[in-house]
Length: 134
Image (cartoon, rainbow, N blue to C red; front, side):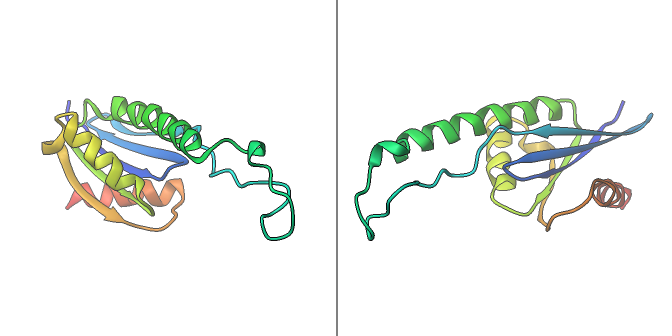
């Protein structure tokens, strides 16, 4: 069975559209990546500043990276059977995923990487169908 996959991705979620001989399937993977925490309380400009209110930057970065690793591994697991993969999305996540796919020996399956803005599920599915119909 031939499977072609289109993937819209950002750091919060991935929408995977798989086109097979039997039809089309859409899957959603939601990441547990949180926005960067901001320090609360007094600012250094207006008064006392307590650094203990928010974890240190390196610890927050390690947590952020750990959540991203889990998220990307879940996405890659869904792409393993794909014959061709189209990756598109608005931010840096598509480039980061492309690098991980290349390390996972899936480089030859990447059909393209494109920058697009936010899209609905139907727009994503239509883009994938149109891309692989050509």
